[in-house]
Image 1 (cartoon, rainbow, N blue to C red):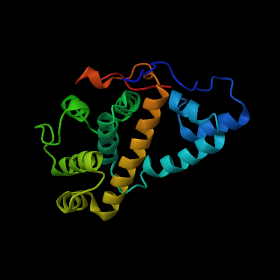
Image 2: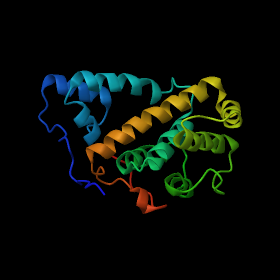
Image 3: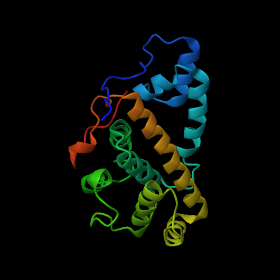
Length: 196
């Protein structure tokens, strides 16, 4: 089996930041490690921020809860501890996710008893199917579109794909968890909100 290092492969920028890096970081949000790696090339950071301005805003066709279901489940399925922990820590309460739901996102299934809302179940089934088959069956598509609308279904697919890319990056970069964020292995214990 190939060796896997546990050390970050690209060092995040450390302050003080030059003007371009500072502007790039300001466009991304709190200076977490991932953003400080992306800001090593300010043009890349600004491009990522453009994507995020839509998908992490109220402009998307998804509710905050639906978006977080897609992101958290995708990160969990990809084993992206860093991304899962950061999102759960910062958004789980805002998205109305309880401890059982956070635990299910990490290691459960859309059929778990904590998922009583058919919209939640439809979103999670779509994420799971996209992850395993890179496609949606007609039945899953119909359920997703009925739950979140056609525009919401497209946004869910795009967010799922984007967070596969983010998950690939944080895993391949070997980014350690942000301080105070939970791990996929923590189960139902919720960590305090991420502050930067």
